[in-house]
Length: 267
Image 1 (cartoon, helix red, strand yellow):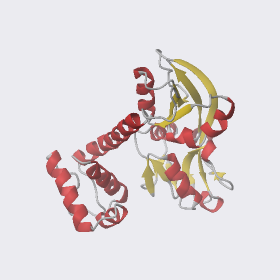
Image 2 (spheres, helix red, strand yellow):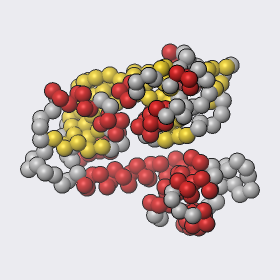
Image 3 (tube, one colour):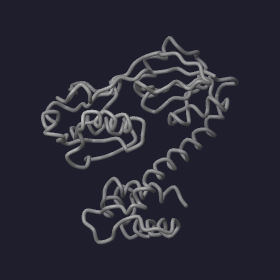
Image 4 (cartoon, helix red, strand yellow):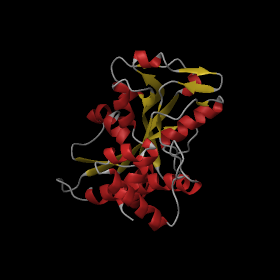
């Protein structure tokens, strides 16, 4: 198993086209196909339905897609964990947080909240909690949505709040609307089972709404989706701290936005 195979597969899941996926992975289409075949051989299953247009995953492919996202996150978290052991400081204060909070919330909050000799490590929420419990982190800064419990073995302090809303540039926002039980328009979506993806799925289910068509792009990264929103490519649920100038909220029910606490955790 190679990380390249995982990245290839997830890119193919996003693009649903071998040629476009190969271009994004900066290799030729024949080479991309050979690597994909090696992944199927290693797994011992068929991941896509051959001869079907547009491309569709088999049930094995759908199952592996969910696990592939976790595998990639775990491998990158492991890399960040070992790299964070090196430091310019003799005894740094190690703070773990998510990439979204590191880019949006952290810079404003940290001015008056943290000591100077700090080491900031970006990881998934799960990896933040694991690092804190294992003693690799002194603190962890993570989002907590309504109804989510605080880990009982950790002390917590609410240090801020974040709003998650469906936003776009004005011309794009005009194209987004709920018709019947379908959300129509150019939508950019989080990968299923990510923190934001799970929250949005719950909000949509609560009012009986689903997407009218597959999203234009899906990603686990709020920053990646925000960059596309900024280019006028679509609308996405973006945390308020990442919302750019001139963006507007789409005309959808309030139930399709939510607030989360930003929680500072210690052992």
